[in-house]
Image (cartoon, helix red, strand yellow):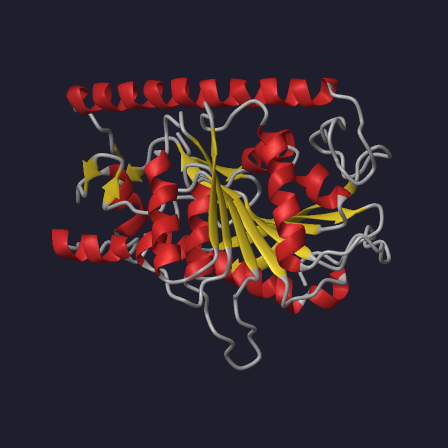
Length: 373
């Protein structure tokens, strides 16, 4: 029986089927372990199904709302999978633009770019497309349902939806490095997209929000012909920010989050103290300096996955460092909530102010760029 190779979103090949050693098939036969794993899978599927249903309802509500104006982006039909443009959408979607060919991991890292069909405002927003530290195409679809691209592109922004890789292949340090590579790519191609590289906004939600926060507080300086990875402002939804104090749970060196994000991928074994130090480097709330950009966090007080305490902890750290920071608490908001597009509008208003957006329409940037430059 031959193992088959499957492409996950066209970039991450994985092997399915048994592996052979000589003529013997390697099989795991521990029934207790198998049963435990099956239960974990069932629990994850239940959680995921509930979240997807919530987002589907959000999309249905969004479709039923009337169109309230070309600059607002509310009430527009949702972008259908496989369709790059539609007459009634405020953007053209350019899929799977390669921003890095990782020779170390043997994969290409990609982003989708959403260019406004109306007047462009000369500004860009980097959207980190990741959920539970997985960056499959479903995460971009989730952001479509929340009307991220309708709203931002409707105001003239060009949005770069960066997929930083998934936790089954990359750890937290790798994903942060991938995201920074994507930000450099955006700055290097700013002239093509007619955006100001010094006035980039950065956004994300949940795991994508965690990586966005981390990139914002831990930017890389320019080096040689490589631009820096600094952003002008960061607007984030319900991000994890401190894994050492996560709600009421203390640090656990054996937890799935600790091992998935902090443990090396090269097989090197770290002791508990080394794992803790590795995880500290991935806690945005513990990496804040006075050089961090202004932040807006939006978080529901009924979030069942990421405690509100996580946003409060980052806000406290930012204010202690004299960094402008604001937290908006959504009453009854979960992970996410049905009317989240209203808060996306609030965030877009905030970005307008932070990035200096003007209402003067510039030239359209809807023409497809050359992929993979």
